[in-house]
Length: 300
Image (cartoon, rainbow, N blue to C red; front, side, top):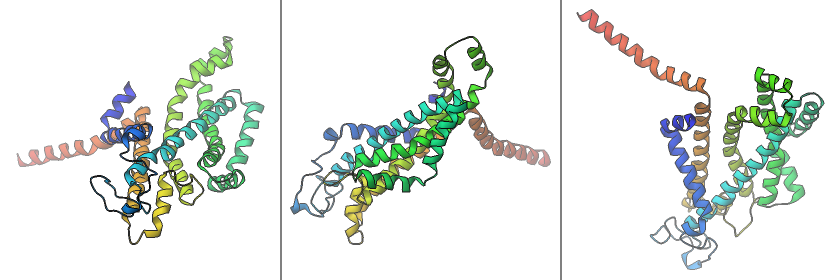
């Protein structure tokens, strides 16, 4: 409840949350929201300008751009959220095991993470896609295989910090099972850290998936996806630049909303950051009041 109140006080976070919720709802109910079939070809409307029937105009095959933008939410955002959830889940399980049990378990898991993190993320993803083949499913699998190691390492650090607290040591001495200690004592206190690192990774994953689709490695035609729409419009980017504007703005708005919400979530979950921000805002006002008092005193 405290976290929700803190988020509501931040106007930018509130707007970002509204945008995120609207995007997710639009993707889930795309058949009801989209005005036309996204794959319906009408060559008579090829490169048609925006109208009341087609608010964003039509592409090179006469397809409704607005409908394709709405249907593109599913692979560009919803499937990315699913892949992120799987990555965080795998990373959290391994991170809790490594951070709590330490010793050989920690060494074994961390050596695997070191191997996975020793390669640049994009290079590793491209290598996996080259083995599995092109397609959205393979890119999502590659992203999961690359991202889980980073989540495991970050979550393991957070778990190690909290596992050294007195009440956790007392629970161990009392004979409470390890799984119960992790579930009751460690998961609640580390949840805020997991939420922050997860939300901060959504934007980069959306850009990564859209980038691979732009290169032709992601979802294949005729399915709608924002990166692929940019790729289709680049042939006429100088004569019809507005065709790149809609998918480009969609990516910018969604990534910005997730990034702004992630920053606000970090502040809302960490009282120290909120106190620091409040002090920054209050100090100039206080000094200004003192200066005004001095001016009044000098005049008197």
